[in-house]
Image 1 (cartoon, rainbow, N blue to C red):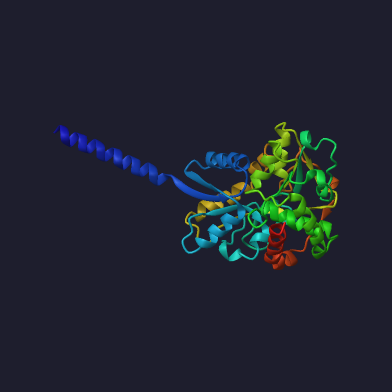
Image 2: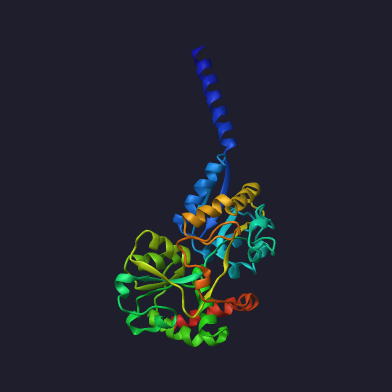
Length: 332
């Protein structure tokens, strides 16, 4: 009799655990964004959706895009959260068409006209400068990075591996080429020479390296630099005087995602008023909703010299430019 009672209790326990597990849904997110940006938003999403458990895979943009490509027949991820639009636009076949429920609240220029690209924030390229190391060295833009006093003290990542680094490559070509990217390569050669052949392993190594005093200046993105400024690190943000390309960042649902409905919920969440307000007020990120005020920490867009690239040219020349950059940096 005692054995029967024990068996029944064990059976009830197993059944109970099985039911609890079945109630826990899953969402797998691939993201190149810094953890201090994605983790607060993931936590908020989980609090609002207690039955969904998020699994985050963090890596560089290039690595994650390759992963999505490799897994396209049996996808292991549900969402790619963050990646330069120019790195994605020739790979839209990898992603599901989905329009967020918040689409009407977004600025017109950030609407999902492609079907599979949901913009969620605007991330301009900037320079992050260690004020303790820079001292009297003038750093106001790209031209100043050719100062020989900065040789070997500039933090930059391989643009084939980092979305933020590739955005800087585009920004450099258009800014230093006065609107014609082909005229920007003379500057790239001088810039690579002042890098002293050094390319860092990932985008986080750039802003961390500058904040930690390993490098005087780094080529990074606004949100990462602003977080260090707001935390009181000895750094400042420089918006290149030659011009800044202001492009939105995207979130994408992976084709044939196993947790498709949960992925849709996350896209809706990340464009929601609450999430965008959190980005605006706590995470130093420029929002894409038209019903929110601008960040009080970031420089108003009206005070930044904005320049523009050409999507068609960038998309068609992407591989050529990356190869050309590789040839230049390896010849140093």
